[in-house]
Image (cartoon, rainbow, N blue to C red; front, top):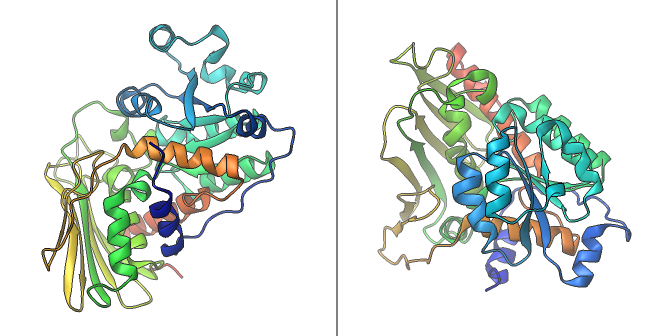
Length: 368
């Protein structure tokens, strides 16, 4: 079953999030030939951790426009296991040092970067230089400067760059955007967004050199994103406070952080994220005549909606990764912009850096 085009187009029309210009795709391009032949676009996964193994690879089996066509890993045992499991030819298996050789593989059209945050720029730039379009997991990188390097590299290569903001494709979040845009409950006044969990020991996410920060970079970004697409505006200022009750475990990242955003139309957003406890998963928007919410709000499935008038119609879940990848493939084939371009990831990084600055200084930081 193909994605619901009406909902997708309605969402693109409704949201005010800016999209990047689509790079030119010449008649020589293998993806143009793919559109003509009807073959699926080949996706190479860079990084074979839990997300690739348990979410993205299975989602590729459900897509209409994509297929697994390659892997990149630094672990020979993983390469062997994936090669056998997914029946991959020898020339579709790469190491991080040989990624550039994908330029000689016409079966790979898209590279999906799923490595630790601080490696995204390196792997995106290599993929772009190999002539491949790039879908990069969030957060886009660990600094705005790195994000800009990724954008520049893809533009120089005439390739598309998208960020893996899967919730832009979730029908429950799309419904919340509709409720806000159509002012079903009147003008928005306040948004509350919170997401967190208790993290285990010895993970790369606890290493600032790889993660760029704590829960804000990892899952708080979902709450930040939600406030932006629900309000339909960009925040003008932010204040924040961070806490750390375990300086050993969280020696160079925050354990928890709370922040408040002000938007030009008057909406105030209060957000929280943590690595200290579970069950922290909600999005609620308050308007003049009522409210609407998602709780849980940000997971791969099981998202539940509710409205103050008790008229929320249950919305069947989807595989967010499958729809996300299909949409990106269609953007390439139809030569249209993605609604989650690199510029969107860059905006989030700039805001998150301001949140960290506000927490560190105790000052309200202007975002204009």
